[in-house]
Image (cartoon, rainbow, N blue to C red; front, side):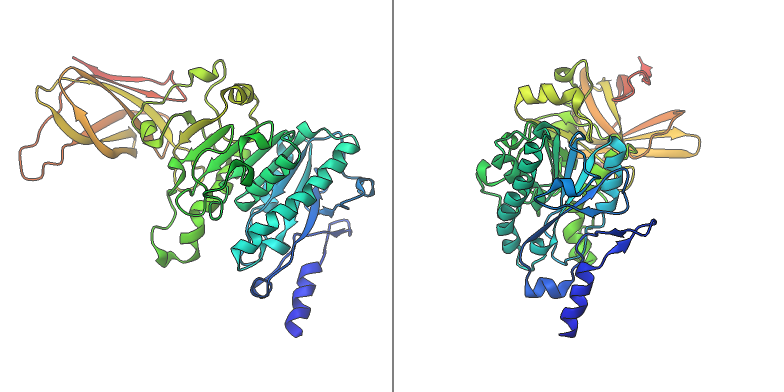
Length: 431
C-alpha cells in the first residue's frame, strides 16, 4: 500500500510557475506501474508562447474553459510512443520550445503515458486505436468551433506515428500534415495501409527513418520519406549489446534528435531523391531537378518550397548521411575525375582536406571502385567537418595490394564541388 501511495503522489503532482500558478505536467510513472500494467488515460497539455514552461491541461469537451487556446492559430499535436519504463520523454520540453520558435501556435502534448507504459508492448499497440478515437473527437470539436483541419499538424514518434495516422484516417485525410518520426515496426511490418501510417492519412505526410532493421518500420509511408544514413544503423550508436539500454534505443531515438536539430536550425539536413542508399553513395542522385526553382528537400518544419511538388509526385524517397553527434551535418563534395592509367585497377578512395593544421578525411569505401583508361568517374565524398579555407587536397587510392607492387593511378583531371556551395569549386589538376 505504501508503494501505491507514493506512485499516486508522483502521478498527480503539480508544479508551480514563476507567477505562483499551478502547472499540469506530463504523467510520471515508474516500473511499478509498468509491471502491474496501466489502462489508457489520455491527457492534453497545452503550451503556447505565453506558457512555454507551464502546461495547461485541456478539457476534452469544453475549449472555452482554457483562454490560452486560440482557434485562429495553427495547432501542433506532439504524440509520444511506447514508454516501457513509464518515465516522461526527455525531449518533450525541447520540442515544445522549438515549435514555438517556428510560429505562434497552440502546442498540445498528447500524454497517453497511462496506456503506453506497459511492459507488454502489444497492450500499448491495442491502446493506439482507442487513443486515436479520443484525439479525433477533440479535433472534431475544434473544427466545430471554427478551427481549420488544414492548420492541424500531428507529430508522432514511433508508435505515436501510427496513432497519428489513425487520427488522420478517422478524419478522412483532411488533417493538414502528419510527421512520423521512425514509425514503429514491431506489429506493423505486415500491416495494410489502413492499419498503419500512410500518405492518405493527411494532406501531407513526411516520415523520417533511422532504425528500419530493428524498432522502426521498413518501406515508404509518406509523401516524402527521409532515410538518415540509409534509415537503419546510425553513426555514434553502440554496435554491441554490452552498451546496455543505449544499444537498443539509440538508433530509434536518433529520429527525434535529428528532427530537434532541424527545428533548431543548427543543422541543415538535405535529402537527395534516390531509389536506394547505395545509389546515393555511388553519387548517382546528386541532382534535384524535380524541385526547381526550389532546392533539394530539407528535413524540418517548413516544407512549403517542396510540398506541392511532393503531393503531385505521390511518394518520394530521399537519402542523406550524418555524423554521430551534433550538429549531425556532413559536408558533401561531388568529385569528378578522369583516369589515364593503361590497365584496369580496383580500389577504395581516401580524400583529405587540409586547412592549416586542421585535416578532415572522407573514406569512399562502401565498395571497390573501378578505374580504367580515359574513363570519367563521379564520387560522393562526405566529410565530418567543414573547413572554410582549403589549402590542400590529398587523394589516395588503395588497391589492396599488401605484398605485390604498388600501382599508381594516373589522372587527367579532377574537380571537387561542394553540393550545397557549388561556387566553392576546386579544379586541382589537368594534364
